[in-house]
Image (cartoon, rainbow, N blue to C red):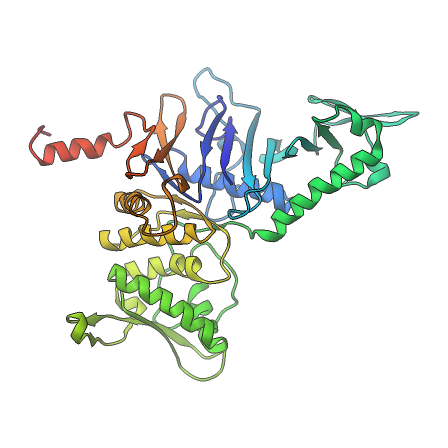
Length: 440
């Protein structure tokens, strides 16, 4: 996804506003400014566009409540909005920027939950609209004509096939109304658009959404079903299963985890200790550190994951998802820096750059200046293949009645561009006070 546009959603106000996304996007700003709501909207848009389902705005790790909690409400004498709107623009693949897809949807209240009443897909100069609510059908001698607030049109889908039994309106900017007059052209154009949508659906997996607090470590694990959860409860079983069934892939993942562990000084080695040879036998996840200068490194004792503090166990689910070879193409991460020392937070910044440079998209909510600064410096210094234009910082600025999203870029020197005056004020004030330029 390259751009998100929204209106009347949560705290973002009644005015339409857009946010620029990049291979690596960092969401920053004060607490309670809608960063988590923004992540939830991205997943919801994905579900409506590519899974073709009604999104669940209460699915973990996001619980946005019912309709009244989700639609914009200015309070006071202002009226709560009756609908909210969102869209995204997306290229077909990070490494094949050959065509652009735009998707938009409008949500209305249905049994206290948001329901997508209209969807629009656009590819180059043709578009496709699907309606599920608020449609009137007039049966005439020539066939059915649909009427909505967006206009009216003839229905050819009975002759060329339907899509989910929803009324379809095809928009063609090249030859207006030609698709209405020529059902064959309608069918051909519809097939082109649907093939592009199938490409998106087949090429990309559903975004991985992590919770801000990950699972608690256990001293001993029993193998469990490898079912995704946002807190990473399944990760120890995934590691154990990989080590038992695919030694080559385990060694590759193990080496990547240990490379990050050494760089961040969290651990130097990681191991799965099995209490038996069967797949169902219990196991432990262990780590150990080395000591001494590099020329005379000594290996320490293996320690259980539960005995090395929360930093390792909180980082391990996110690290595994980022480093596993079959991971998703889009990540929605909340505060991955939780419980990590500043050096480890900075190391995460480098890992994010490496992951995004490899063709995946990361959208990360963070309060860590260490991550932000490391990303800026790595993009500036060419530490990875990620370029400054591949990084976007979205600053969520609170206002009187709504939150404004500022799209901030970085230049070749790593400087932030287009930042509002309020961005970084707190840190500048703290630095000024620290060096004696002002008093508290």
